[in-house]
Image (cartoon, rainbow, N blue to C red):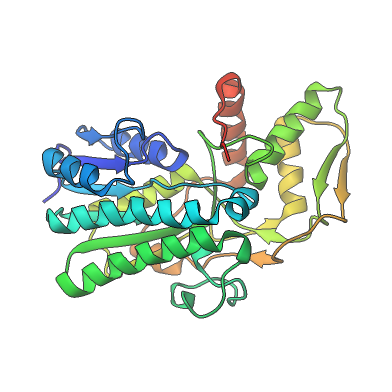
Length: 317
């Protein structure tokens, strides 16, 4: 049985998701958390990973480690996104299985689902159609991780589970305007425009597409829930349960930042998929639920951004 002294290794503990998991577990009384930076432990090296897991002997592994990036990075480096993500997760999953680790929690992304899957996205939609081409390399790697955990669960009865969140945001996000996702990019754009005499902010597309956003601390609480309970299935969606238009998102961010200028929508730029929302009813039925409203989450994230803006993480291509 797990207890607050159980050894828990969080792979990718310095990233947005991993650091949120660390905070959530620490706040819940777990005092034996283990983390290694990518310089200290190369997760792409199978022998190094196996030897590390064998020496540390964690009771639980939480895999939040991945090579991530936006559309540009996925398009420019497809081999790296596919190979490195498979290496990272395969090495961790294989070592966990071979060394009989009690529990493994694998974290992925809603991009594992087909581009044209019905909305809202359900777990059973996996592998029912073609992927979104702009991030298929990352998605294929994550799908293989989901299926590896499912296979180990099916063949050996081990408590390996996969959690797939919707669009995440929060502390330790990437705010680089060239490589970040829509919410942190907007937040920084409005902040810079506010400082520049509230000049107009130009945003891509029409603002009509709808997206779902989850505060990373809510995902971390889902990880904590999966840690403390044996979930009956191998795959669970973790979403906010509601979506909004990109235009509404921009207005909320503008309000929270305090930008008083105008918003210009560049309709010559693409909108992307019209709607993307997850069905998280399986996870909700078990007892987990998100706590952050979007306005509160963005306010908290903006506060974090202001405090850390001089030392922001940049994603290098």
